[in-house]
Image (cartoon, rainbow, N blue to C red; front, side, top):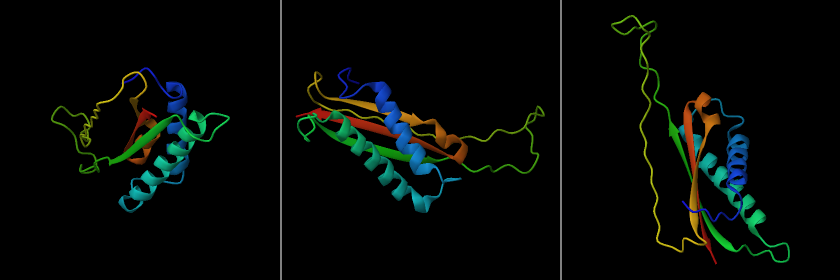
Length: 138
C-alpha cells in the first residue's frame, strides 16, 4: 500500500462508505440478481468522486488513472433447525463463507498505490462488500 494517496485515506473511506450506503440503502438482503447493478453503481460513484477530487481546479484532467473493484459476498444462510443446540447446550453458530483477496502491481511507489475498504453496513443485510482502489500517476 502506498502512502502517496491522491486524496487522504480518511476521505477515501468516506467516499467508499457513501457510495455503498447510497447504493444499498433500499436493499434488505443479498439478492443475486441485483449484485451486478449494485457493483456498477458503487464503482461509478467512487470513480466520479475520485476524478472530481483529484482534478486540478484549473484543468478537468486528473493527475491519476483509477481502477476500482467492488466485490459483494453473500453470507451463508442459516442451516440450523429452530432451537438447535451444540453438545454443550449453547446455540449452534452459523459459519460464514470464507473469502480472501489480494492485489499486486509493479509501478512507481512514489506516485502509484492501492487501498482497500470493507463496508460495515452490509453485515446486517447478509453480505460483505469489499472495495479496492488503485491509482497510477500520469
